[in-house]
Image (cartoon, rainbow, N blue to C red; front, side, top):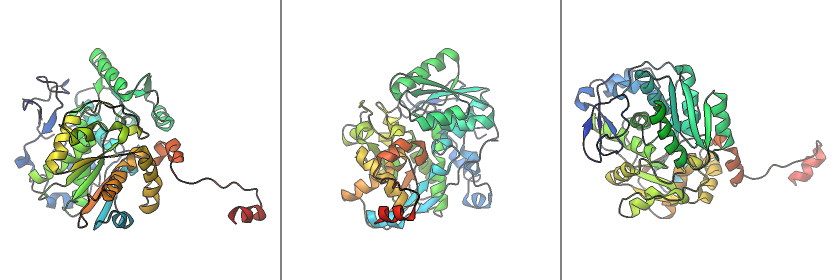
Length: 405
C-alpha cells in the first residue's frame, strides 16, 4: 500500500490515518487523502499503464489507500460512449457519456464502495454501515458479499422499492428511517459512534472519494491522455464531483495530462444548495432536497464546501434543472445515445442540455457527462417520464391492424 496522509482543506492541518479517523480532529472538516506524487510518477507512467492488462480500477492501485487484495466483483473499465447525436443537439464538437450503469450494482457508487470496503478490511472490521437514498446502499450490499462483510444500511423510508429489493436480495440488514436522507445520515453516525461499526458514508468517509476519482483516470486514459473541455457531474452531497476533481488534479501532478477540465455541477432544482452557493457567497445553506432524482436528494450537502471550491478552481459553474427536465432526459439519453439511466443518472445530460439552451457551451468543446445509475433502479420514475404508453390489443391480426391504423 502506498503511504498517505489525511489533509484538511478547511484548516490546512495534516493527520495520520488513524483507525477511527473520518473527519478532521481539529475542526471537523472533511479530510482528503494525499500521496507523495513525485514518488508515484514511475509506478503510474503511461508506459506502465499501457502494459497493464487489468481493465479494472485496480490498475490504479498504486494511488489507492488500501492494502487488502481485492477479491470481489470486477469493476471499472466502463464504456466512454461517443454521442454524436448529443453533440449535434448541444452544438459542440464532440460529446461523450461515461456509462457507469454497467458496474456490478448498476451504479457509479461501486467505485467508492470498493475502496471503502477494502479500507474496512484493512482496519479489521467485519460490519460496514452507512446511510443512503439507495445506490450507495445497494453498492455496499452487493460488493460486501464476496468480501465477507456484513452490511447494515440506513435508508430514508421513501427510498425506491427497486433499490430496497436489491439491498435485501444481497443480504443487507436494512433500517428504514422515518425521515429524510439527512435524518438517516445523522442516525448512522450516531450508531457508528455507539457501536464502533465502520462507516462508509459519502461526504464523511474520505476513502470513498478515492474510489470515485478512478472515473477521471479512465476518462483520460480512454481519450489517449487528453481530457474533455467540460465534464458534467450530477451533484447531491457533492462527493462525486470532488472525486472527479481530485482524479484530474492527481493526473496533472503525475504529469499524465497537461490540464484538468472545467466541471459543471448539475443539481435538481429542489436540491440545489451547492448551485445556490456557487451563484452567491459560497456558503452552503440547507434546502428542501425535494426531487424525483432520489440519489441526489440532499438538504445539506456533506461535501458541499469542497465541491464549491473544486468547481470554482476548475473554471466551471453550477446549473439547476427541474424534475420535468430530468424526467425528459431519461428517454432522451436512451433514444439519442443508447444509455438507460435513472433520474440522477441522466441529470448531468439534462444539465448539458440546459447549458446549451442558455448559450453557455463553446462550439469547439468536447464535453462529457457521467451516467451514474441504471434506469432499472427506479422504474416508477421512468414510467413518469414521457416514454409513451403501451398498446394493448386482442390476440388477432385484425385487432393489431386497427390499433396501428
